[in-house]
Image (cartoon, rainbow, N blue to C red; front, side):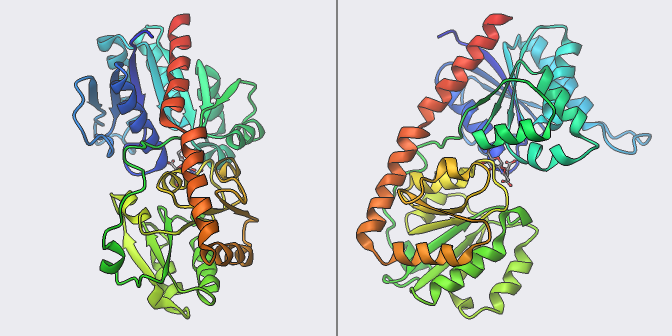
Amino acid sequence: MRKLKIGITCYPTVGGSGVIATELGKMLAERGHEIHFITSSVPFRLNKIYPTVFFHEVEVSNYSVFQYSPYDIALASKMADVIKDEGLDVLHVHYAIPHAVCAVLAREMSGQDVGIVTTLHGTDITVLGQDSTLVQAIKYGINKSDVVTTVSDALKEQTYELIDTVKPIETIYNFVDEREYRPLDPGDLKEQFGIHEDEKVIIHVSNFRKIKNLPHIVDAFMKIREHTKAKLLLVGDGPEKHRIMDQVKESAYARDVLFLGKQENLAELYAISDLKLLLSHQESFGLVLLEAMACGVPCIGSAVGGIPEVIEHGVDGYLVEEGDTDAVAMYAIDLLNDEAKLQKFREAAIRAVSEKFHSSKIVEQYEKMYEKVAEKK
Ligand code: GMT
């Protein structure tokens, strides 16, 4: 396979789209490609030196005449520089707004025929796609890209529903680095958290935004706790945190809920977890589900967006109607109290990640697509 020069733009701070973009860049570099991140700061997962990974910082001028700093123009300008200076074959942008639009502008500015690949991750379509001030720009970014991908079939369908486009869209699922997300020996971590050996551990990981529906996580846990000795680990931070802390304080089993804040080494927490809950109102894929499953933790998720493409109901987890916390509790109580079934689900979760979502398979899909795009240029 030809070695390519690939530019990558994403939101470099926390978030699944930034994680996927960065992990993809690292894995492509390991396969011999040259990677150029064009972002406002070093992507947070770029935590290792690779001789063929480069970072190009987007700096924004702050002239007093600007009411708003022109980040998008600065990004497009930096992209154009990198396209020309490095001779990029492909520019892969994650998120339609503003990244796809900036990439199209950058191609025009550079005068070079670089291939543009846009990956849609979710809220750029499900939330911004409903915003009349942005929808034309999203459509433009999609239509002018050479290839558009979504992270699930559900998101592809939503894109066609919300954006008036006939652009062919390819689904390429998310993946995890199996070297990081794998079953680990829990050591005495459970004890360190003050969790008794006979207590089950339920975990939720998110950015605590409204869309993640934390009130239902707490409701469901309280129903589970009435029948099963368990602790709930709430991992993450965000705008809903204080509201959730208040809800927990007023609940019957407040002492069984642990707020752990943002955490880096999630595989260690999954090593002590028996079940994961993700009850979002909207979720294009749910990368956190895959991370848990790779570590052998079955999941219960709301049957929205791409979640049903990740969890196989009754095999490696359960799907429930959005808002049905009784069903969450019923499935959880059944699973947590049946050791043989729990073990079967754990094994099925690990198998699903390695068969359906293995990083080498997914990275290969991207690689083949880049190759096709670069060939046409
Ligand atoms: O879920 C979030 O709040 C973060 C968001 C992002 O923009 O990074 O995640 C989106 O992209 C992830 C990677 O493709 C998906 O796994 C998440 O499901 C998706 N979030 C939503 O659709 C709400």
